[in-house]
Image (cartoon, rainbow, N blue to C red; front, side, top):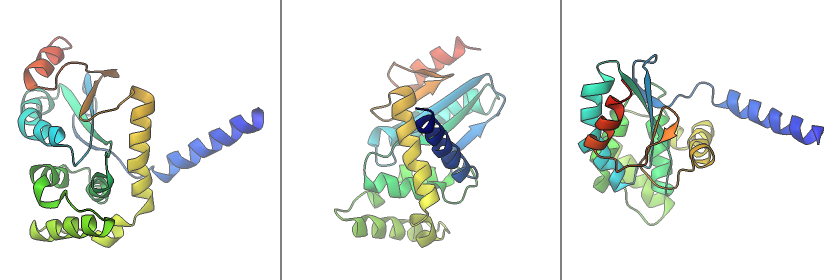
Length: 191
């Protein structure tokens, strides 16, 4: 029993160190009273709508004012979402720029029936948008891939995530519809 425990602890430590230099994409005051985590899949239409219709209001009223911080965690629902998530994390600059571009242009890249087609569509999209990234390095980076997959595993384990987008506010799953009015009303009670 002790061997099994020590082995599990060793695996946990190794995986923590392996991803130590990769951070989730986030915005806001790191010491904010309100911590928002959003689990999302880059091929999810509802996630794209969240970024278009809900996030701008959250950013303006809660994040830019220092009341909240937000962290975007990956929960890829398919191969294209996994590959896109790897690309969004690859530069480790914590920037939302690639995430925004991917969500606002899903129809341009989120297609393909084979791995090769998915990767080619993503590559073409990045070139057409002028996003300068070492595509091959990012797509083949095992450390970033493990980071993205572990995000999904931990989301399911820690918060019982089973759909995207799912929002966690100060450690609790937000159970109402993810529209700005519902979220704003909830957050205002926390201030």
